[in-house]
Length: 148
Image (cartoon, rainbow, N blue to C red; front, top):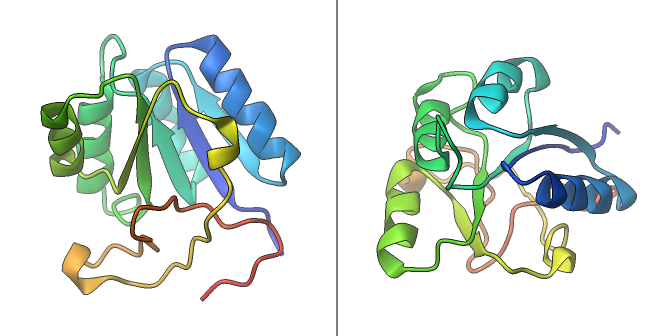
């Protein structure tokens, strides 16, 4: 069974490395980018099972990256989590309106990544995206966990 593929983008090298190290340690294949532009250039080749993105990045920010992903036929169904220091309700609403499936604010406990299964069950109420959304949870399936 192939490892789930997670793409993490943040302009903070520290955050990207922390997320990558943790997720690889618990069994995921992880690709990273330090900007929205770099992420957009790499996403098609990597074909992730989940994208984790910051919002506040120079150039293509997380809102725009999310909109681009949702408009791209090959990426539109990929679950997307915003991992950001933006904590205002208006920012969270904007994230969900852009197409995010989940929203986790910094600072965060790294152990939250990798806890909940990604079932890949289509949700017709969510524009047909195969997002495996769990109420109040994350999207990541642990390696070796059965998919729905």
